[in-house]
Image 1: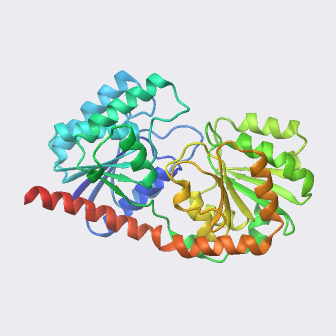
Image 2: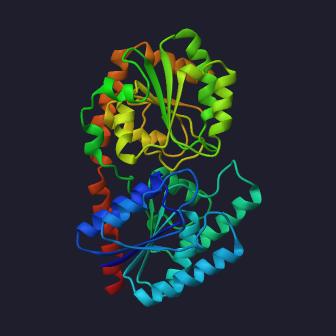
Image 3: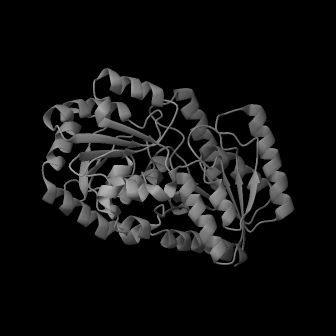
Length: 386
């Protein structure tokens, strides 16, 4: 098959890793794969160099930008339509909302046989301007009409889309976002990993892996940690990730007098993330908006228990007191209590993580994801030929 994947930007992120593994896996199957991406800008890293090593053709479309911009959007739409007509792919598979809107409309106009979209996270949400939400919902409804299949990374994404009047249930298929599970199952030298982050073997390490940006919920973790730090003198906070709010967060931590107990590790290469997770005793995820945060299965497969806010697809991998702890969004006292409970109960941490590893390892293997996605293409193409 000739396949074109379209995504807005190829930063370090869950949607991008999902797309990267799909591109690599389909190339390994012998398919002709092209990746079209917008420019990768800002402090959030990039995955483009690894994508190039897969042998896929890479096209950087300068007008495919994340923010709504009528002039750039019109240019990107026209250039994508021209590209699809020239390349004549069997499948166009779009990722992320902006690329999903422009890419699907362009693919439909170019008469691409199979138009597929993955919802990694919906563009409309309660924390956004109501007018912007209405615009995105209207555009997603329009694009669903020209989509042959819509892949969701969590059942929650399907239900939210359908509740907003987007698509028909038979269009949707949940395929969990794949991981290189072997890297998280590997045994790491925990003390050596901690040493690299300036942590000691006796520290009780609470970790978070997320961009330092809006809606990732670091402020709730900082509030909770002030309580935890008073009661557990060995507790330390390890933050993996970077973003535009870093200086603000560093200042906040300094003012609280806890700078010596919080490590801002910044961006690290993706292949070091498993080692970083293995340095943690608990992983905490306080984001207010996710499709299904990849770091939750990453931590559990690594043998690290998780505490997460119950948003979007979180409950599909974290069952309360079975594989982790689920809390209401923005909850701070309960977050402090849950952290202290797990820090003080090593057998409980081991039990939760072991249950998570057993359940999630097969579900999140990237080879399973690539196989199911590729089978979806084949089903659509076969139905159109019959």
